[in-house]
Length: 502
Image 1 (cartoon, rainbow, N blue to C red):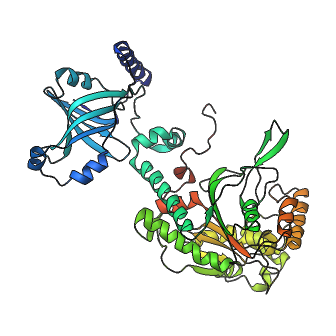
Image 2: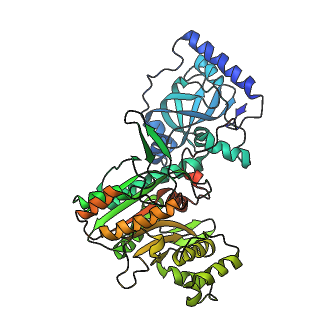
């Protein structure tokens, strides 16, 4: 007979009841969940070290092993049984027979279920078909699986189950496991890149009395002992720049942000962000460093600079294009003149003609940004820096000395979505206070995403912050890009979902 990791459909409650009965029998014999089997070898390690060893060599010089993992497949042929077990590194075949580990142990093994976790002690040999296999000399059932693994794992309903029951998704889907292994490697590569350039990794508050550093609606919580409302942070920016004031001239943080906004394939309310700051640099520095960082992450995780995202071939090792926001608009809309771009009424007429919603209170800068985000950004497939954002929509960025209406700010777009945002930092406390005041007016007018006035941050700037630049990179979107994942939920282990009963 043959058991697969996708058994024939049967009543789930009946299967669970059968497995519970087996567990009850195990309990009556003693410890049902033993913890005395030391795993000494991983499947991938054995395949790497002995994958080329011939049958004669293994027979002449036996390799003793202790492996452990989950039963994913089993096929019994009379007095022998072959099975595949999976550990964190991969999968390996085991061989169980009446003569080893013995008829009684073999018979017990036949009644194990797909999904059970076992320990196997034995030695390596090569089967007639050439597969490296562990000949079992001893078997232990380490954890009984009470729920059968799913028969199928596709379709809309199952897609939500993948997110809701990520533990099952990881058991079944090798592709899912690969995504999260790569995510870890990408983050590690970024961390090592920055540490290698003398950046200091720090941690800043997750709960803040004033949410700042981004235009976003925050989550609110309450501290009982202090009887104080606090906000889950929307960005670490203002705290990191306080550290630059304090003399920590190159700092970074990789951690969670929380924004009370809609959920989509590109947005999750809880997400991971890298932010880093360097004194005595400007946004040109960041536009030089970021391509090096992304190239290094891709080469470390994937071994290549050329990636494919949703059918698009993207080269991360080539020079990144640079366009101002108005140049990008005019490349996509050659019919729009400079005069239209700099005339509020004409811009509104153009947006209405294109059917693009906009905020009536926005000035020219806000309208330009709305036009860009709704009609241009999705066309930016190859890495492109969009530069020189209007001051109106960049309340923390330094004004250009040549044109105070724009800032030394950029956003990096790859595959039609924003990957990074950075700028020369505004270190003029009076200019920053004025910008906070303008944001406060917008908040009073009903803009829930406008920034608060942060008096302590202004006080910090008044002590003097050196000229600096900073940038933020959305880790989740970067992992999406490098793993060819269409949805942000595919790269977050436990994305936010409605309660199951809803």
